[in-house]
Structures are given as structure tokens and as C-alpha cells.
Length: 348
Image 1 (cartoon, rainbow, N blue to C red):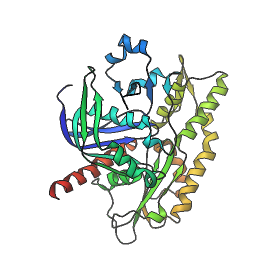
Image 2: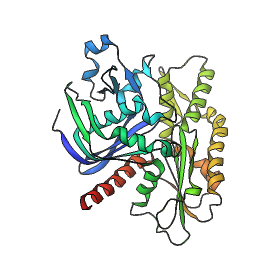
Image 3: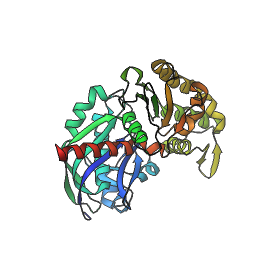
Image 4: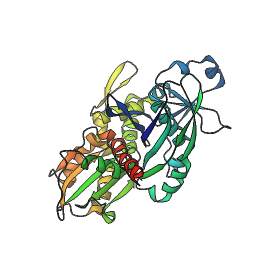
């Protein structure tokens, strides 16, 4: 492997839609991502060695008795019947796929030791799975370099927090974050692929648990509804890659997707998603209650730009903030929190 190194903090946000991780680029934190999809490869393809030449794919093994899979940005273009579909379950974080995505990110990080690995979980699952995930990810991970060399990455310590907790920590660490006093509150809503999570933070920087929560369901329902509507409009069966293309387009604020050699506008199918969106925001409003003490309503996640108008309609325009790099907020927040833990360990 090329110039392996030890790193103090590894921050990996394994989402149902994408896996994001932080690398140091030109002395600054940068977020890279790949779809949370694992590509199974048959023996013939493996023998041809084609995938080994792709710089945006990484080969991963999760156990000695199971065949390897490939992860990385290029997976989305090779989706077919042999791909492992997105895993949408409460025990996702304990699955082989989740482990593959973590190991894929560690491979991209080019490291043989991580002092603190900071991970995030949805608020729906963190209570049940935090301890098990920490145990599973601590210790040695056998990774495969791009040249086929097998090496070991030793993870010394694993810390798991709620994904929206990481995102709001990132927001509050920014120079332009508001100063909170007295009864001031900040509400952050993370519109993820499979869950909608939210947290309320008070002026002591503590999470107000009885106003925070999560709802199963996210952009997957929105994207699937548009995908089904477009397929019906075109009168044909669409491949899974179009589902991913719609998701990407919406995260970029676009309403067009290419099918074969033609761009198709899916604006007309967005209206059919309103029922899903209202159910997400009704769950938020029911748990948060009155927002009259909320100075800022911060939204992030892959669905942030799409959800903005709905949040404006239901919660009002006052103090609404769509985070810059909204898809990266959790990963950046994880790195921030991991750095705090690493410093504490040094002085402990």
C-alpha cells in the first residue's frame, strides 16, 4: 500500500443512502462519499481483474468464509442483479454490508491505525445498537489495498453518537453559529435516506431529549414515488441506477434525470410525494411542540434542499438555515467530536 499512516481521528458516516468519510486534503477536512451499495463479483469477473484497475472502487472482505465485495463511487454504474440492494433495516449497523462500507472507507483513508473512530447512528437505533457496534468495530480490520496486498488497520477506540447530534455539533462549532442564552433553543432536522432525525439543543449545549426523536422513513419514500411515477409515464421498467440518479439529482436541487439518451423532467411526480413529507414533518412538530423558543431551525441531509419549502410552510421562515455542505454535516460533525475525544484521551 502507498505510504500508510496512523491517524488520530477517523470519521465515517454510514448512511442508508451514502457512506461519507473525512480525509485531510490540502491541510483541511474534506468529505468523500460512495453509495451504500456493495457489488458482488463472480469468479470470472474477479479473474479478469477489471475491477482492480478502477481507481474509484475498493475490494473488501467482511469475513474469511465469505467472498469479497466491491464498494466505491463506481458501484452505482454497475448496478444489476448481482448487486446487494440497499439494506433498510433497524439492524443495518450490525450487518455485513455496514462492515463492508466502514472497511471500504478505512481503505480509502490509507491508514493502518486509527486512535478514535467516530461513527453515527440514527436516533431510532442508537439506544439498541450503540454498544454492539462499538464492540464490533474496535480492534483489527483486515483490509485490501488497491494492488491486492492485505494489511491490518488497528482501531483503538470507537465512539458512536446520534447522527443529528454530530450535525448540530458541526453547526454550533462554526464561527457564524448563534450564541444561545437562557431559554434559547436550536432545532436541527436531518432528512436522511431511510430516517428523519431531529434534535433540540439548549443554551448549555445539551440535547433536550424529550423534544428530540426520529421517524422511520426519509428520502427513500420520496425518491421511490418519483421513480414509480416516471416509469409509469414512460411505460417501461427502469433499472435501479435510475433510482440512484433521481436521488442524486434531488440532492443537487435538480428535477431532471437521463433515461437512455434523453433527459426527462420529473417535476410533475413530486406532488405525489407530499403525503410522505407531511408525515415526516408532522412527527417532528408533534415531538418538538411550539417552536417559539427556537432561534434557528437547521436542516441538513441529502433531502435538505428538497425539504426546504415544506419546512417553510409548516414551521415558518424565521431562523431557517439550510446547512452548507448539508450532505456532509454529519461526517464533519463526527470528525469534530472525534477530535474532542482524542484530545481528552491525550490529557487523561
